[in-house]
Amino acid sequence: MSKLTCISPIDGSVYATRDLQKLDEVKGLAEKARAAQKIWAATDIKQRISIVENAIFELEAMNDEIVVELAHMMGRPIRYGGEIGGVKERALHMTSIGEAALKPNIIENSDRFERYIAREPLGVILVIAPWNYPFLTAVNAIIPSLVAGNAVILKHSTQTLIAGERFVKAFEKAGLPTGLFTNIFVDHATSSALIEAKTFDFINFTGSVGGGKQIERAAAGTFVGVGLELGGKDPGYVRADADLDAAVETLIDGAMFNSGQCCCGIERIYVDERIFDEFVAKAKAIVDAYILGDPLDEATTLGPMAAVRFADEVRGQISEAIADGATSVIDRAKFSRDTGKDAYLAPEILVDVTHDMRIMHDESFGPVVGIMKVSSDAEAIKLMNDSEFGLTASIWTKDVKAAAEIGGQIETGTIFMNRCDYLDPALCWTGCKDTGRGISLSAFGYQSVTRAKSYHLKKA
Image (tube, rainbow, N blue to C red):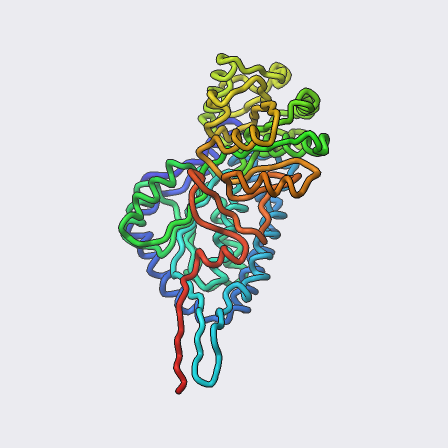
C-alpha cells in the first residue's frame, strides 16, 4: 500500500508515515458523515457550541506535545509555544457569535405574514489545510462549519501529517458524535476524484495558487462552492511620520517569523526616502541578532524552513536578485547553520531591489524581504498594487485618515495600520486577485458554510 511520508526539516529523517486511503473508503466515510450531519444539524445550537468549545480546551491540554511535533514536522522553534493562543482566540470568538450569526433575518412578523431568511448548513465540508500553521488555518473553517451544523472531513498536508489526528482526539474527548469529524489521508489525485464525484458540499482550501487551480478544475460543473486562500506578497509601507522603532520591529518580525512561512507575512517593504537608511540599519540590527538552529533548542529564534525544496526556491530568488543588482545587508556567514544544502536558510534583507526582480513579485514564503525607498504615497500605492496577489497590506503612520485613504486605493483583502501579520477573528478574512476568493472568520464566515433559505408564510 502506498504511503504519505513526512520528512522532518530538522535532519531530513522520516518523522511519520500514514497509509493512503482509497477512493471508495473515503466515499464511505463521507456517507457516514452525511448521516451523522442530519442529526447534528437538528441538535440545539447551544449544545453544538458547548461540544466544539470543549474540543478546543482538549486541544489545549495536548499543547506541550503538539509544540514538539510541530518542530519536527515543519521546523517552528519550540520557544514560541505553538499555535494554541491564536487557535483559542479564533475558535472562541466564532463560537461566541455563532447564535447571532446564524439567527434568521426577520423581514416581517405580522398578523398576515411571517417572512424571514434562515441559514441552513450545507452538509459535508471538506477542509484542505496547509502545513505552515496547521492548527490556526484549519480552525478558520472547522469551527464555523461544525457550529453551523455541518460535518467536516479534514485533509491535512503531508508535511504536517499528524496534525489532523490531534483534532480527532480533541473532538472525541469533547463528545462530538461519531462520524461528524473525519481525518483522511489521500493523495492529490484521489482528492480531485472525490471533488469531481460531488462527495462534498463545500471545499475550503488554503494553499498554493497551483493547488487552488486544481481544486477549481475538479469542482468545475459540480456547482459545489469553493473557498480559496492562496498565495500572497503582502506589502508594508512606512510613511515619514511613523513610529520608526515600532515599524521596524513589527514589520521585520512579520517578514521573518516562522521562517517567513506565514500566509500574511510581510514580503516587501516600502519606506519613505527620508527615513529609509535609518529603517534599514535598525532592520539589520534585528536580523543580525537571530539564532538559526535546531527548533528543539530553546535558544533558537529561527528554525529551518519546512522542506529543502522551499529553501532552495528562496535561495534561487535571492541569488537572482543579487545578480541583477540587489544588495544584501546581512552577513550571511554569521549564520553558519545555513550550508546551502538543507532546509536551514539564513535570513536576508535586500535593498537596491526593483519590481523586475522575482524577489519583489513572486511569492517567496521564506525569511527574506526586499526594502525599497519611495518618495510619496502615490508611488507607494502604485508599487503595492503591482502584484498578482491581494491578501493584506500594512501602513505605518500616525495619521488615521491618511491610512484609510491609502487603504482605499490598495487592492487587498485587509488593511492594517501600525500592525501586520495578524488575523482579527471579528473581521472577515478574505483576499482578491490570485490570492483567491472566499471568506472565513467573522459573522461573514458563517455564510460560506451555510445556504440562505427564504420563508414566506401567509397566515390569512
